Length: 239
Image 1 (cartoon, helix red, strand yellow):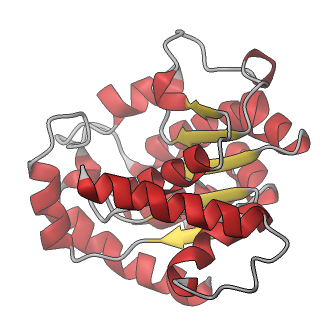
Image 2 (cartoon, rainbow, N blue to C red):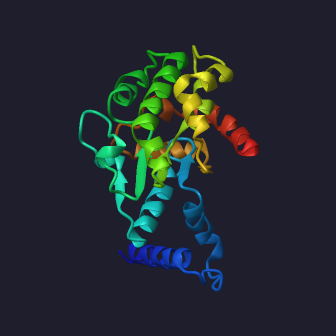
């Protein structure tokens, strides 16, 4: 409770600094607040990295910031309808927290069938599925929200497909992955801020093993996580 209270206090201070014309007057904790200020200048942000590497921690901090700023928050995780949300259904919110894959339509098939750890499906099939799941979410929610001036925080995005799918068994080249319609659409509307998390595959695996959720598919296998770590490093250099 004490830690949570302190975090809320820091977020409130950061929110006040963001919205105050005198925010440059105080430089206390400047480094820790820099990313929060960047949220205002970057209406679309996407933490990404291997499973268990700390994305959820970053997302929670961003949610704390949004709450401290008294923004109206939409969390895709709270959506219970069978069909994915349309912007007009949730247009009253200020900040939208989404994730990939989704848990509706194509995203549900990815989570509970296509990414099973016995690997019945190849990288090509997953590439097409992720791209279509992404295309639906962008067309129904993300693009209209951005056009309306909203803030989007994405847990994973097209960057994951560019790193993961080309190195999977029975996959397709990076150029093919980039040219899938859903990925082309996402690259056209790429995040203004891409936050790449870094953690050793072994430590990340230990975190995943403590989870009791559906995150233990092929993407949570230690050997695969070690294999995917190098492309993430290259991605960070390019970014």
